[in-house]
Amino acid sequence: MARHPSSALPLAWLYAALIVYASLYPFDGWRWPELSPLAFLALPWPRYWTAFDLAANLLGYLPLGLVVFTAQVRAGRSVVHACTGALLIGCGLSLLMELTQNGLPSRVSSNVDVAFNCAGTAMGAGLGLLLHGSGLLDRWQRWRGRWFADRSAGGVALLLLWPVGLLFPTPLPLGVGQVLSRFRELALRVLTDTPAAGWGAAFAGQTAAPGLPPVGESLAIALGLLGPCLLAFSVCRIGWRRGVLIVVIGVCGVAATTLSTALNFAPQHAMAWFTPTAAAGLSVGGVLSLLLVWVPRRAAAALGLMALTALVSLVAQMPADAYFAQSLQAWEQGRFIRFHGAAQWVGWFWPYAAMAYLLGRVAARDAP
Image (cartoon, rainbow, N blue to C red; front, side, top):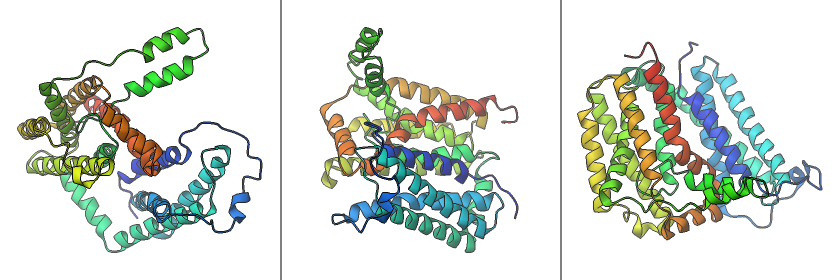
């Protein structure tokens, strides 16, 4: 079977890394387990369990099985090897995470989690096998070849991850990349009881900027839409296809933001984020994107690099408010803990990963 470049490989690595983070968060209180690390495997079915936890463990590993299967098939391996590899990776990762959780007081190792994680991996591999057998994977590859340039797997993977980052609460619509406050907390924690403790306290205690005026917020929202659109332009062929991608990206951004708001503030408030300021920002971002549909891919990468740099600069000026802090607390202490790691890390670092990718596209000698 021929080898084909696939965005499934970087997605598989990223998704596995996010599973590790979500499984071991909050990384506090490490200890040596009193019992054998494998003792949990012989435990009976737990007395207390919830359907949400079972579904989360099942569905959490389904995408991993799918992307690992797809990556191996696209790399030229047989379906038998792809299915076996997906199961070994998914089940092995689940078992490793449960073994490691023995050293975390805030986590409980569970054989039920392992069983449902393995079942989810098998379902993902089975779904991949179904898609491959029906020819949909080959059709996707042919479609991607018509729409996107060669060696665009990284860019496509970043575009697929962008809506995931929007599920984690953002300080303003499409405003991904706000990590300054967490870096301040980290500096205070790391430098406490050291000669540099005063510097750490000063850095952590710095007051945030007074915020952005409505025009500044609209500009940030416009850049939040323009950035992924220009990323798409840097890997998409010039022409009408870019206009379609603008619509798809805009719909995905609105849908993800609406879902995040509904999860945090109840379904009846799902559209509370759509203020006149947000509407103006989305309109400006859409118009600017349409005006740039004919720029060459290297120029689109350079413009996208500038747009994302401006976006993270503006987002860093957004102050924390009570509602934003309340939504973060709900994610970190409630049921969203299962998805906290994935959405949080994607939301924090997506623009920086996209900037690094765009920088590579600008520097590439063979880029048009």
